[in-house]
Image (tube, rainbow, N blue to C red; front, side, top):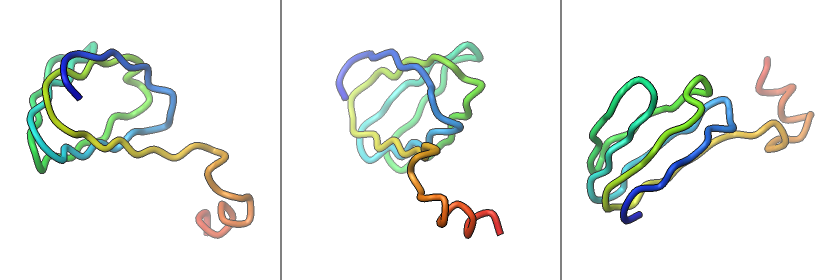
Length: 77
């Protein structure tokens, strides 16, 4: 990523892994700095956020349709 981009949070959570560079996250609660090697979780109560900076960020999330019902039953046990 290079520069600022605004995002809307649509998942129960999003897991961020900063692979390279430095980024700034801004949400309704404040501004946070992250750099290579940092990891953080953004929960659904953060509806909008902005990422700014230069680097690579991997964002992971699970949607309800990500698993078959059989797999979900296994995960719940």
